[in-house]
Image (cartoon, rainbow, N blue to C red; front, top):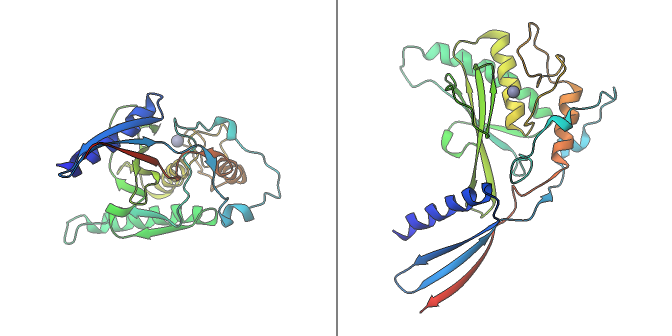
Length: 252
Ligand SMILES: [Zn+2]
């Protein structure tokens, strides 16, 4: 029971934060004692810039659209544990549409690998430990603050959790509609993956991968996309830092 109570309490922490508080008192009972624990969300600090982004230099001086990027309640959506683990949906063995899903996964992989120039990525075989999960599935018709809808053909959402090293963490889920294929599938994967990497906003120029709408000739990742990503990773965030806990015995 105690294990369950602790998990429930951790979820409350994050909920509590979205309402504006930054700490929470957990009361728990063990067979030996009863205690309360205060959990404080970490202060907002910048992480060291990953080498891949530190090396990026835009010789064309194209600018960025950083002002269109919105931080979450706990700061910018910045990854700080590398490589970022990515799962792309794989066919079930012996399923009838295995070949469709296989070529789908291959196209998605090509598109997201373009981002590995800027941030270290690792594609993994199991969805459970993924930071970013990409599924071939139609996005449901709903809008919530933690989602980036795009013409109802793709959607990226995030959630916060506390990882096993006590770090305030996030994970992302990308849904790509089965109705898309070819260059449009790749454009959607490239675009949504940009959101998952932290570009939580849109460009107003058609020549950027994070342009808000679908275009006839989808662009690759632009210098402006990369400049924007780099500026995001220079910002402070509460993500990726340790929660502080203070425990007090109520009786013993
Ligand atoms: Zn978008």
